[in-house]
Length: 167
Image (cartoon, rainbow, N blue to C red; front, side):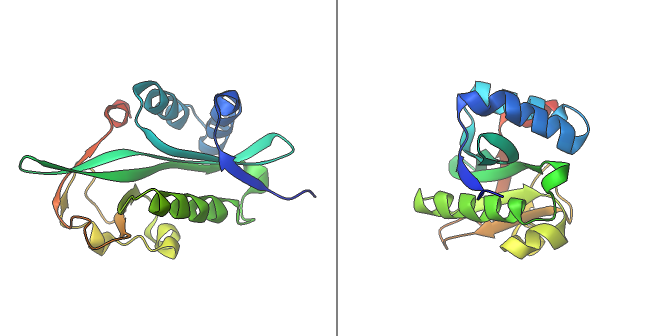
């Protein structure tokens, strides 16, 4: 088998990503979310995993703001993360997340938030304890944060991209 290539998603990948998301999530909710995030210009980073042009993994980070009074602090939200069912449990998702984190840190991002399984995302350093002080419509044990720098806020209101309102 040829090696996996992780790269930035291109416009030419959009149909393959759409199909992957519909298959991985057994519906089109996440695919519509990704389309809206792209259309609205709220995508910070979108990566695909592929071999010989066949896309089988995808991760997207969108702009999220932490609002405290009149202060807006830019952060990112991880959603969605998907791998083709035939390629799951082979480390594809982990490699996508780790590569994305490296790129986000290099670009100056300091805070990432995810709503997902604590056992899974905890492997990457996400913790509910780092998110529990944020005000959020999604506040629960599954809301987790990962700080890459001490300048990242520890409280405030999480304001997601408008596309999340359609979920």
